[in-house]
Amino acid sequence: MGKRVMIALSGGVDSAVATSMLIDAGYTVEAVTMKLRSIGFEDAIQSAKEVADFFGIRHHIADLSEEFEIEVVKPFLEAYERGETPNPCQYCNPQIKYGLLMDWSIRQGADFFATGHYARLKRESDTELVHLLQARNSRKDQGYVLSRLTQSQLAHLIFPLGEFESKDEVRKLARDRKIPVFEKKDSTGICFIDKGDHLTYLAKCMPSTMQSGPVRDRTGKILGRHQGLARYTIGQKKGLQQWTKEEEFVVTKLDASENTLWLGLESEVWTSQIRFHELRWLVPVEEHEKLDVKLCQWGPKYPVSSMEEGIMIVSTSARAPAPGQIIAIYRGDEVVGSAVIQGDARQGASV
Image (cartoon, rainbow, N blue to C red; front, side):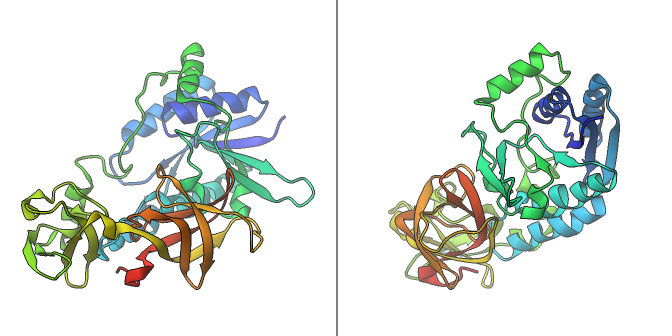
């Protein structure tokens, strides 16, 4: 019997193809699907069960709804209340999916835990150090959202899709093998918001984020009133035309303490100084190594000039570092660490 792997089966094509590849590689595979809310996950669970049945493997359901509420939903809502722009994956991946779910899988006897994320791992046999690398498919690479993981988590992980060059290859494999979900569309949006968008959800669950407040320009002049800071993020241009008849403004600051939306010029959201906290290193990094950072998953990389005392200096100006978002730190194509953005250091902490 080969090594045992528990695959996190979502019901989508990526985790289904990852399952197929693990079986091909000779692993003994079982599947688990997370139930993250008391209602609303029935379709995903049923789809995952159909995939597990297709492969003839055991399918588990892990009810993590209470833990998910505490570890993901609550901080997600609180971040918006602080005027931040959070990414729920930054809470879920280290705490839930690769935390509680992976721990549960290991307790069930699994040697490894696998998902359909697009990333690669490189293991050093002499030191047991695990390196997190970008996927071959740069358009689907998810190293950014995995940057908050730890060495102890990486040690148990397998990412079967990391070497695929494109999503078309993944779908072709699923189609050729007649895997039931080969035509299923990629999921979009926030996984725990099944009806409406995040603004509808915030209006219901955190109404303070949708309260009206003043809109000011860079001189302090009141231009009008907004209908909730959660509707905006740093650098946003859309939806401002009602207040900017003479100049094309962008959002420069969300002041949650005063419930004030600040607008300014495009030049004001470009900075080379980024304030951060909660710095975590995945692997040892030498003081003078060449590093780059990404401020959002699909954004560009910026070369790092220096990083100390909670302030990161990048050698080319970065646009609109949004408080609450993750900074992923790279050494070439390797993710070596991460931090959480607090804002433009020229303004101090933005919230």
